[in-house]
Amino acid sequence: MDNLRPENVFRYFKEISDIPRGSGNTEAITEYLIQFAVSHDFDAIADEVGNVIIKKPASEGYEEAEGVILQGHVDMVCAAAPDSDHDFLNDPLTLKTDGDYLYAEGTTLGGDDGIAVAYMLAVLDDDEIPHPSLECLFTVDEEIGLLGAAALDPEFLDGHVMINLDSESEGVLTVGCAGGVRVDTTIPIGRASIKGMPLLIEIGGLLSGHSGEMIQKGRINALKLMGRFLFELDQKTAFSLVDISGGDKDNAIPAEAKAHLIVDEDDLETAKKFTKEFVSKVKREYAGTDDGLVIRVESGRTHKVTVMDPDSQEKVIAFLMHVPDGVRHMSGVNEGLVQTSTNLGIVRTGAEQFVTTSLTRSSVLSERDALAAEIISLAKLLGGAGYLKESYSAWEYRADSKLRETMVRIYSERFGKEPKISIIHGGLECGIFYDKIKNLDAVSIGPDIKDIHTPNEKLSISSAERTWDYLLDVLKALK
Image (tube, rainbow, N blue to C red):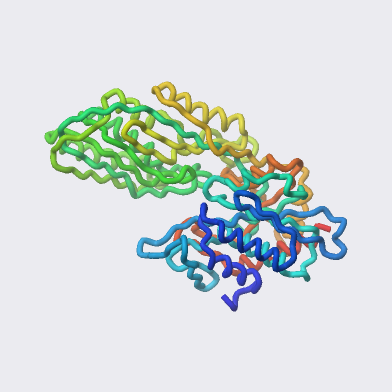
C-alpha cells in the first residue's frame, strides 16, 4: 500500500478498510469521520442516522465560486469466499495488490464506495488543492436501499452542485438514473396434512446479476421459472406444495429457488422425466443468454406432511406465473436505455402467508407507479395485499448542466477524447438528492471497479489515480 499513488488517497483507503463498515454497521466509520473533522478543525454535522457532512472553506481566489458537494457512501456489501472465516463485524479487510489491481483477500473490497470516501478525505486533508467551498457528504446504508440519503435533511446542505463519486467506470459521466420502489405482497395460505413422498426441487446454475444493470440481458429469474415449472408439472402429475423460497435481495435477479412438494411414490419417475425435459426445453429458449440451468430433484421417505390446501396452492402458482418481471418498456428518447422494469427478487413461504418482494424501476415515475400497482392488483385479486416501500425518485437528465459542460471539457483536454455520457437504469443516491435539492446540477464519476458486491471485487490502481487527477482538474476549473 505504501507504493500506491496517489499516496494520500490510498492511505485513507487503508484506514477506512481497517474499520468494519458493512451496511447497518456504520457507527464506527461515522465516529472516525467526526474525529477526522475535529482533528482538522473543520465544521461537521452528523445526523441521527449517521450521515456526516464535513465542510471546508474555499481556497484563495475561489471565495466567490459556487460551492460544490462531493458525495459518496461509507457502507459496503459484505460478501466472503466460501473458505473465508472473515468476521465483518470485527475484522479489518486484508488488502493486497495484483499488478494494477487492489483487492481484499477472501472478501469484498469495499471499493464501492470506499474510494469515494478516500478521495474526499484526501481533498479535505490537502491545503494545496485549489477548490470552491466544499461540502463532503458521507452517507450511510446506500447498499440496502439508499437509506442514508433518504433520511438526510437537505437543510444541512448549502450547495446546488454535486459531484457524486459512486460510479465504477472511468471515462463515463453519469447524468441520470431511474427511480424505484419496492413492492411487498402477501397472500394468505391454508394448510392441510397429507401422507406422501417429499420432493425437493432446486433451481440453480443461473447467471443472476444486478437488476438495474442486467435486466435487459435476458437472464432467467429463478423464482419466475419455479412458478412455470410447477404450473407445467401440474399438467403432468398431481402434487401438493409445501413451500417455495429464493432470492435474498430485491435488486438482484434471483439465481436460485427451491420448492418442497409431496407426490405419490408412483409418480416420482414421472416428475423426474418431466424435469429432464423441462431443463432441455428452457436451455434451448435461453441459449446464449443464460444456458447453465440445473434443476435438482431429491426425494425422501414417505411420511405425513403439512401442505398448502389446493386453493392456496393454485393462488401461489398463479401469482408466480402472472407477476410482471423483466423489461417492460425501452426508452423511445434514449436509445438502448431501459425505461421501465421490475424484478421479482425475494420469495418466502411461512406457515400462513406467501410473501414476495419486487423492485420496480423507471425513469418515468408515473410508469414506475403503474407497474407497481399492477403487482399489488394481482395480489389483491388472489385474496392478498400489496404494499409500497422505500421509493426513490428518478434523477432526470438536465439539458442545461454547467457542471456537465465543464466536466466534459476538462476530460477532453486531459485525455484527448470525449467522455461517455450515460443515463443508467440502476438507482443512485443522486435520484434522492435531485428530489430534495432544488435545481441540483449533478454528475457521477468513478474509477474502474470490477466484480463489485462479490469476493472478486477489485479496483484498478491506475484508474483510481487518473480519476483523482481528473477530479482535481474539475475542482480547479469550477471558479
